[in-house]
Amino acid sequence: MTRDAEHARRPRVLAIASGGGHWVQLLRLRPAFDGCDVTYVTVSEAYRADVADADFRVINDATRWNKIGLVRMALKIGWILARVRPDVVITTGAAPGFFAIRAGRLLGARTVWLDSIANVERLSLSGERVGPHADLWLTQWPHLAGAPDGGPGVRPTGRRAPAAPVYRGAVL
Image (cartoon, rainbow, N blue to C red; front, side, top):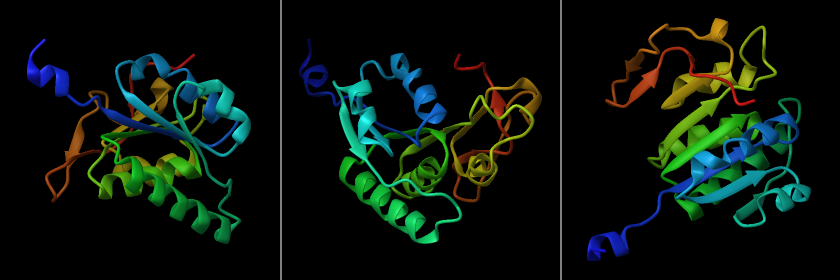
């Protein structure tokens, strides 16, 4: 092994989701994180057992009708991102993922939004709002994909950004 390989840093991933089905779908992505240092963030301490071998953080839960809760959530996520400094932020939604994608990009992380499998008829509200700000915006339903080739647009900053979600399969 070379000296560079010995000192190579493993990629840091922040995997974040709200509870219930969003969390379950995020857990199904775990094999993709092999070889990475992963920090899991969610809204319930009860989920710690699901990722006992990884760094785990809990944030408050909030919805769009609880503005103070959303502010608390956003601040907590910002604090976690500043401490972890992930290379990649990945989320299956909802509100926690929205804030993590927005703040993660500001900190230079690559970002991935995977819209929930439950959203059969249309994209989630969070996905619609934050998807264009993610580096990769995925849907799990082919009929919800916007561009057949997944062609991303280019922003004035030079970072590529998806114009619409891309379908590359489902997390089942």
